[in-house]
Image 1 (spheres, rainbow, N blue to C red):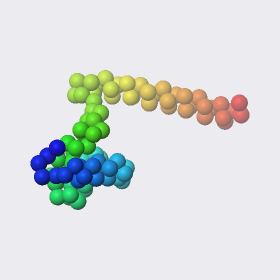
Image 2: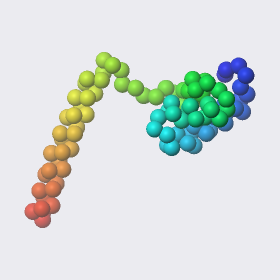
Image 3: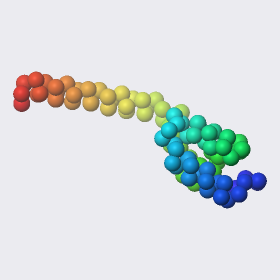
Image 4: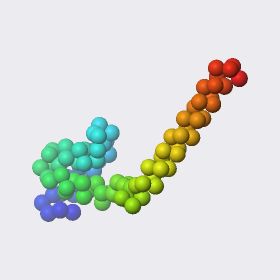
Length: 93
């Protein structure tokens, strides 16, 4: 734990993160709000959250092109299935 912050402050920050994360667009934005409340640097709260919950899942730069291709393929498959279902509904099947 960082110098100058009590265990209860860290515990409160992590609890607050868990309770309020869905109110923010990103992990960083949520941690920044909590950091402002406790008078800590944003990176301190990010570190506490990462230590407690693990790092966020991030696609590596090398894996990104393949991930995009996979997602595009999935979109094509879902659009085709949607067309087929729409046709079945319009035919009353």
